[in-house]
Length: 31
Image 1: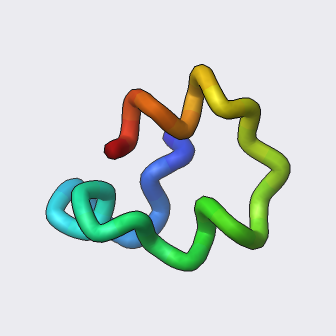
Image 2 (image 1 turned 45 degrees about the vertical axis):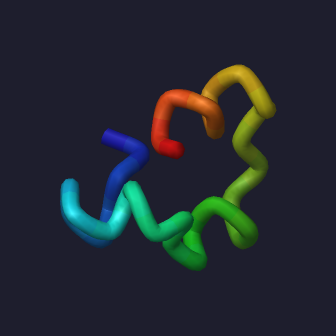
């Protein structure tokens, strides 16, 4: 999965969101 830091971290906008090339529509699913 794209969530590498755990489920709880996905609500905190983890660093991976900035390091990986993730489209906006995908990033919205982790907010």
